[in-house]
Amino acid sequence: MLLSFIVRRVLWLIPVVLAVTTITFFLMHQTPGGPWDREKPVAKATLEALSAKFGLNKPVWVNVAAVRERWNSGERNPLRLTLAFLDSQYFRYLWGLVRLDLGPSYRSKGTESVQSILWRKFPTTAKVGLVATAFAVVVGIPLGVLGALRQNSWIDYLSLTVATLGVSVPSFVIGVLVVIGLSQLFGVKPIRAPEEWRGFSAAYLAPGIVLGLGTMSYETRLTRSSMLEVIRQDYVRTARAKGLSEFRVVTRLMFRNALIAVVTVLGPAVAGLVTGSFIIETIFNVPGMGREYVVAIAARGYSMIMGTTLLYALFVAIANIWVDVMYGFLDPRIRG
Image 1: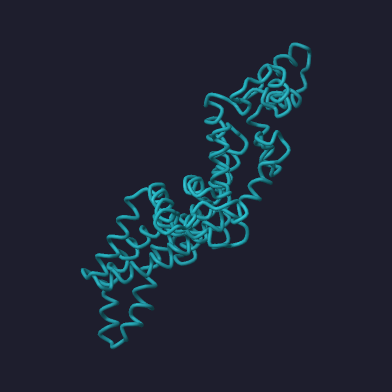
Image 2 (image 1 turned 30 degrees about the vertical axis):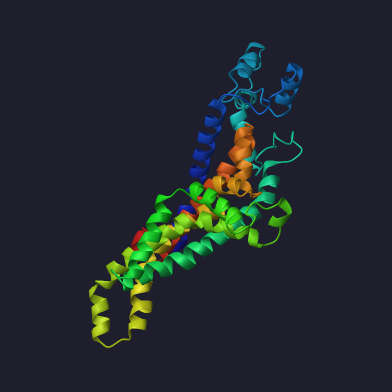
């Protein structure tokens, strides 16, 4: 039963990937401009050659003109007519996805593929996301637990204040304030050179903490509310009446049951943190996927935008599947 439940959830990735690909593809092709737009005008022959090289001279959706031409020339082969009908940018991109090919990078004039660039940029983005995740979990969950155990005390008010500020203030505002504060007040250089992002250095602390602040605040509020709900349950009062120590009541009963709701939202949140933030990576000049995505949007790099969007959506979908599987493992009623 559990295996079939997992298989059903995994199969849902197919329509999700198809939907994200289709929506992103047609939205990108509806925006004005193209990947060859530059400040200096490019010769028409050069534009035609580049479009032909990368298949951008093909119709976006279906190639009706190719089918009509073959039909008028006497071609009646159904297979060849179908292939001519599907000879468009959209179906070419879908065929590339089947072959795990995200296409060439227009910015590099086809010298690099999108997957090779993402493969090179992902470790940097993942390190920032890991710092953000560690910060959100190590600070957010204990702060929520302490706030619930010391309700209406100064610790509770402190946790609520921190959580409210973290949720209310946008991350890009906090990022700019951190950059200004570190550079002007403490003389620390928050904007690092490209070589300083190699390995796992202190360069990841500032962007990681800023990136994880929103998730930390949300985890604090959710942990606090879940703990307060569990505290009022009858089995907690019964455990205390039986003489169990407060430490065992908190750790074995209250915290374990309150953590179920926290883990539920933590899965997609971790996926979002690990895949990075466009704004935070741009503010701190992080050479990761997020910054590459922003550059691709400015340059109308269709293949890079679609590849990055698809990768982000895949991470979030996998995180949601993980949460569903954990639910199915803990509660057999959900499997059916």
